[in-house]
Structures are given as C-alpha cells and as structure tokens.
Amino acid sequence: MNEVTLADLPLRDDLVGKSPYGAPQLDVPVRINTNENPYPPSDALVADLTASVASAAVDLNRYPDRDAVALRESLARYLSRSAGVSLTTSNVWAANGSNEILLQLLQAFGGPGRAALGFEPSYSMHPIIASGTRTTWLSCPRRADFTVDIDAAVDAVARRRPDVLFVTSPNNPTGGSLPPEDVARLAEVTPGIVVVDEAYAEFSQRPSAIRLIADFPAKLVVVRTMSKAFAFAGGRLGYLAAAPAVIDALLLVRLPYHLSTLTQAAALAALRHADDTLASVAHLVAERIRVAASLTDIGLRVIESDANFLLFGEFADAKATWQAYLDAGVLLRDMGIPGYLRATIGTDAENDVLIKVSATIKESG
Ligand SMILES: Cc1ncc(COP(=O)(O)O)c(C=O)c1O
Image 1 (tube, rainbow, N blue to C red):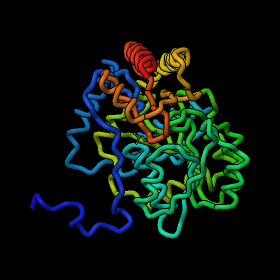
Image 2: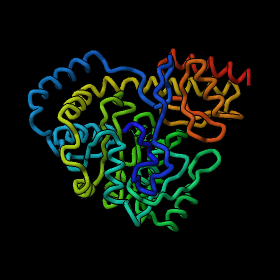
Image 3: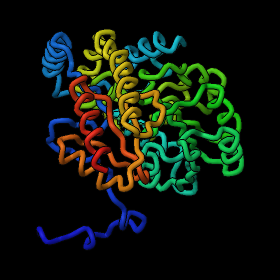
Image 4: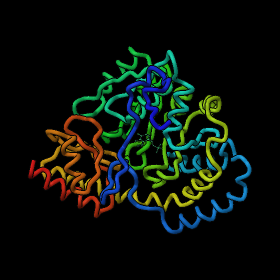
C-alpha cells in the first residue's frame, strides 16, 4: 500500500506535473518568510480566547452557526470603523483564511470556460486556486519595477475580458499598492467580478477599495484577512466586503458549517482586542522604513513597499543567496523572481539580524 505514488493515481490530467503551494516551514532562529505579524497575542487576548473557546466547547455536539452571524457583525463593525464606510452583516462574509474566500469566489464566478486575470508577479495562490477550479489563468505582466502600468492594464482587461480580475493591493510579493482611482478604472472595463485582495491593507496609507463597493455593487469584492496585521494566522480567518448579492452567490458553493464553532469563538475574541493588536502596525511600518533604508545603504535595491515585507535584490543567483541566508539562520522567501528575495518585517532584533546578515552576504558576493 505504501508503494503507491502520485503517478499511480487517476489524477485529473490538468493537475499532473503541478507543484503544491509550499513556503518552507523550517525551525530556524529568524523565520521571516510568510508575512506574519511577529508579535504573539497579548496575555489578555489569550485569556479571553481561552475562556471563549471553553464556553463554546460545551456546545460542540451541535453544528456551528452556519452563517457566522455574530462574527460577521463584529467584522462589519471593524471594517466600517477602519474604512469609514457603513457596512452591515449582510455585506460581510467569513471563511477559513482568505484563501478559502478566494476559493469560494472562483467556485462561484470562475470555473470551466471562464477566465481570471492577474498582474504578475503577484500572490501565487491566485493562479493555483484558478487551476483547482479549472478557471483559465490570464497573466498580465507588471513593469520591470513591479508597478502596474494602469493604462496598459485597463487596455489588457478591456481586450481579454476576464470573468474574475485580481487586483492585489498592497501586492504580494512586491509591496506596492494601487490607489482606489486606478481600481475604479479597472472595474469600469471588467465584465466580471473584481477581487481586490487587501490582505495587507492595515499596513498601507492608501484608502481601501471598500469605498468603491457602492459604485460597483455588482462587481467589486474586497478580500481581507486576520492572518497579517491581526496576528491571527494560526486562527485561520479571512473575510470579504461586498454587496449582499455576492454573499448570496457564495452561499451556493460554500460547504455547510465551514467555519467551526471554535474558529468563530476565537476570532470574536481576537476582534475584541483589535485595537491592542493593531497597535503593533505602526511600529512594524516604522521598522519597514528602517530596514529598507539600511538595506539600501548596504547597496541593495529595495522595492518600495506599503506592506509588512520587502522585496529586495539584486542577487546574481537568488536561490544560492536564499541558501546563504538560511545557513546564517534567516529564512526568507524565494518567489522565483530572478535576482530577488522577500523578507517579512519581524521583531526589532530579527530585523537587526536581517540587516547584519545582508551586509555580510553583500560583502562576500
Ligand atoms: C495577497 C494575499 N492574499 C491572501 C493571502 C492568504 O492569507 P490567509 O489565507 O492566511 O488569509 C495571503 C497570504 O500570504 C496573501 O499574501
């Protein structure tokens, strides 16, 4: 039984030869490869969450609230407050990480015979989820400096007419963001759904695209996550803001009871401590500016970032340089962009190590 390999299975033809998503999970001193918030939850949050989960546990013989109403209410309050737009429970949907939200969006609006377009390099899961849902992937390149040429982008969208358009702002792995005016120009020419992936919105000074939902109610969806600024990556909670009809569409494809009672209770507790947790954001942004300046001083090219990470280079051999950082105890991300690596902003001490190791590698390279 153990000798069966993937090649022996009746796998779908279009999955043969594909690689799974796989940011390495290695136990090294400085793990800055998956854009998490480096600060653990506060003692008060841990105590609140533990008590909430304990009281939810007595009901675990019952299925969870299928529509996660209390959680969506709390998320709507947070979004209304932070984006300055009035949203209610009917505008918000939640799932196990924003990856599940993206999957549900492609299940509902993509699929066989349909196409999704993204401006690459961008978040690697967009084409992977497209492939898993048999949505054709259309790649539109960014400029050499990784910004989006908005006129060319509008033109490409008008010509290629995607059913789903991905706009990642701030963009992972490059860090830059798009102003809402540019998102609106793209929405005007997109025949299908515009998914604005704002996983890193809290780190950016740009206004959120949430304000555009009222102008494009049948098109615009803003996807958020608690994995980054909210320091809740292990809790797996993603969400979206959109017109209520978009959520009606997702109800057609979501698995019943997808969000466990424990996840809902834990996320509600995390949201009660939002102000406290999000206080780390300003410090991480200040650290991003400090690290970017230090890496630039060393002679590296740092791409301007609005998020909690930096893409930097240029290295003759990014793969070999990634290994050199790892040998020095620093786990970075190699996104397959020739000459570049990505580092998440960590604690001050982790950032100091990154700068020090970068100086050594640059000197020896
Ligand atoms: C742009 C972007 N969107 C979505 C996600 C998915 O995050 P999660 O599923 O943890 O919410 C990530 C994670 O790295 C991301 O970078």
